Length: 392
Image (tube, rainbow, N blue to C red):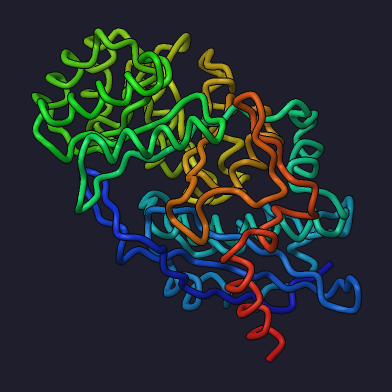
């Protein structure tokens, strides 16, 4: 199996919604195709992936640096000697050639999209869903009973109201989601607290509600919200402040008795080690939300999980950010605590394909080969266009 071409296209997200920091109306995502010399059903086998949601497309980094490195490499240098198939770790190393350590920003997401596309290609080669390929690669058995899932919504809208929020969350309950996450930080504390209390009412208790500030708060506001929220018994309080302010994160865990969640904006294993060493993490309750699509792919993500476990944090505390099919397969393949879903937002990437079944608070991945992105309504057309470009 050899790489014969790699292409990227920036695909816009649909919708005019925001969290406390950004509006997503102008956001894009890098959709990547890695074409190989293997043929299936008369066509070249092609791995498809993207860099997750929330950090913009990385077309310049991919086209100017990473893709030329891959296409100029000795094809055999990208293969696993034991199998003759592409090695995601070797592809990642090649894409990162001549890159200095540190500076884990957009390049982490660019590399992640390519590396994950290789995993998709491997799963398609084995004619199995990606979670089966991932589990076998890391000596595990995939979660056969389904993956715990929560619905991520509660964004700020131009025509917002508590009634609109209640109707949205009721819709998630009706679809079978036992837990929801809503945004905070976009209003003064009394307005946000009213939103949280409305969500707790809809969900029948605080344990069915998580809140996310998206790194908006300074120290005083982070701690003020911690005091206001501490009596509600929430599922977790997420990313109150800058994700790299480990000293403030430690102070927050000392002040807030419930679970604190962070990690979606940590893009390297060293960042995670620093969080574990300096961030006051409590292994019995706190949540880790790193996202392979934003952090160099699955190779680096697994190192993050290993770093957690080395400090006594069970992988059941890992809930990847992203709300999409790729992270569903990652969670199922690695036996993680669960994943989020974006029902009805961040199309065409957010949410799952119709062959994924939600039952009893668990989501069951479909059985299509690879990540199954071609079965996702709306995304299927974008993928068809990218493949047509590859066909020339």
